[in-house]
Image (cartoon, rainbow, N blue to C red; front, side):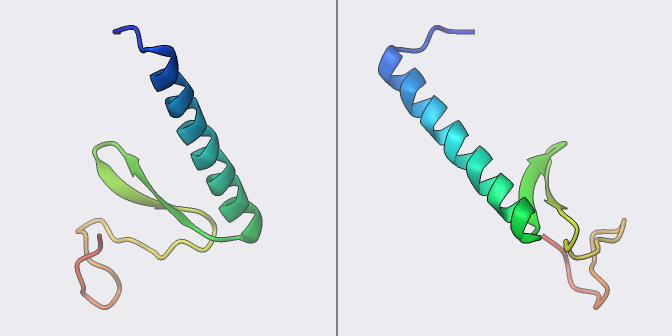
Length: 64
């Protein structure tokens, strides 16, 4: 991996902290989040809408 400049590393650390805090807040509020996992967007959380295997939701619409 290439070495990042101190400024770039500080910005990356700040962004990671902001994402972590936001995901934790959503978890505490019982809200789902959309994350990138295995090369595709994934809904995570207790209240996440159900996704079917074929990529369509319960109404037959394409899920994103």
